Length: 131
Image (cartoon, rainbow, N blue to C red; front, side):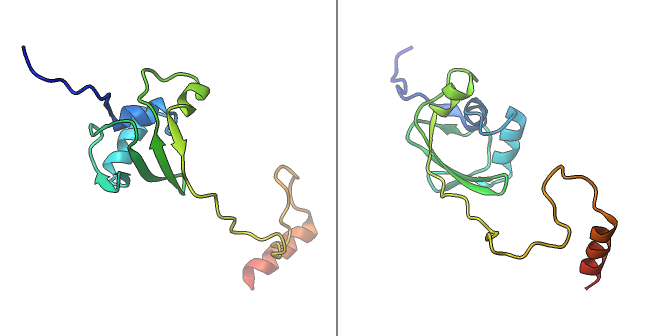
């Protein structure tokens, strides 16, 4: 069979997202893509079988944060995290902090694992919820 073969490496987007450890399972990667919330080079992608290559830019939201990922390499396997991080460059904007340190805390707000509220704290909570 004669013909030219594409020398550029390409891979399914769901498989690459899984190899890069941006999502936990390949099924979740497929669902993310088919939801229509993934863009490849500013073009919406809705099929998990869409092929991507190095230098493509993926834009999507994951866990409530905007992710902008430039693909550096196509993965051969789902290896350790250090190997997965070498597959992409994260160009995402820094996380915006919604709470300022000076903001007043709700009554009886406590650090994680500090135990149950006391009787006084419980009354403060009830007062705060009803006002």
